[in-house]
Image 1 (tube, rainbow, N blue to C red):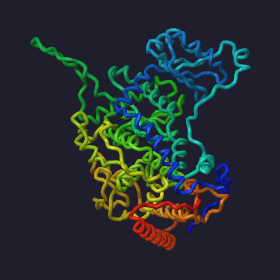
Image 2 (cartoon, rainbow, N blue to C red):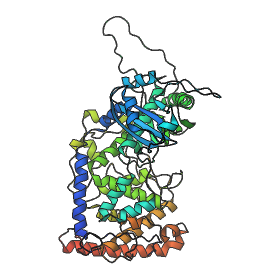
Image 3 (cartoon, rainbow, N blue to C red):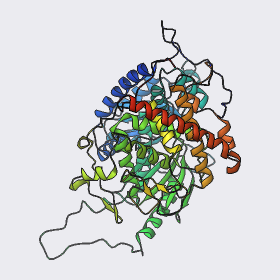
Image 4 (cartoon, helix red, strand yellow):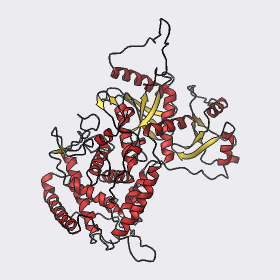
Length: 573
């Protein structure tokens, strides 16, 4: 067994008046089930479809402005000044290259009123490009007298906490299940951060509309699929499909009119030219848009830039409807059951800590691949926690039918059509079984397919084969090499062993060390040793596999003796 490295913490909390270091498995299961019911009750109140949520947030963003203001400002006077232009629905502050306020008005006319009294910046040595956006700068007329006695405004967080701080928080939880929910709460996008992402899309839309007045810019990917982590990139989709759809041809008369338009050889060429022009506009007109790169020869052409006022790294694409549909599918899975998101967030955090995933392109497993693996695992439970994509397709009606570039992207969008699962397994069980399942998965011959929810033979010899749910001939993990897959398997086996040891009540960890999920986020000898050649770590992997096989046999015997029901130890862990 690989030993765990240092980071000793006094972190096993004692419950008041009990002398017990943590809840027993039975107690933890009961409390985590209660927490899950509360979380699921919140999910159940959010039965809006993905397009409805998108449309609501985009409209909200159109009534919102972004203001760079002094860190020390009288918030009451600030709001009173802005309220002269109209009713304010909400506001909040955050920090990114200065202090910013996000202010949402009740009416769009309020923004016009504010723009009418806003002056051009006075710049002596440079010339300002006279593009009037919804990004403003507020200055105090008398800085020394007005700001001296003011306390800094409260700023909402825009980034995740350090791993060391996260481990401290996890150790204060009373069960492994609640540790997973705590991690999700710390890492998930806040309401303020989501609003900010839609605002940036709206600001880029203002630029695009100079050429394409009926176009919209929508976020997709992690920003909207319910699995986004604070600090993740902002992927945007320039939607041009609405252009011309509102025009009506005259039903009478001998003539009808058509626009004369530039013709190009292909849709890809059109996307490249449009993005080239929009990229130049963002570079030359967009306040705070820096480092603009036009990556037009990629499989999916895009414009990449940094938005300094928000700190977001942005990618703008067009003609990328499959990705938008994929975002909606993940939104549905994340909205069905709170355990889905909690498990995905924890697995992805664990993978990042151990270098299984990386921000740098390469042979690493991606977050999307890990999400697909987690969804597949949840489909394989008995009973399944989430339906397969084919089952969602069977629930679809005519409005849900989407065939995009020959790819069948059909599935039910209405959450109310999807029957809730009868599976009541707790997150501590799911986490341990996830590592055991993939620690023993036959990656050498089998593939992962969330459309079918079944193990299938690999159609090609890639080390890891995860079928793209929509573009079914593609392997989303084609970049992963054997070495990186071996690292994942070795760490999964180690973590399965640790959790099963704790569940038996005889953890090898001392009481002063992190436990449960917190222990899995510590570095280990295995994570370093697997970087060496396979022949050097073979005995260790074989020993862990033998231990897992032994534990699996004991668990199966226990299930037989208890009528097939999973039991929880009453011994305090």
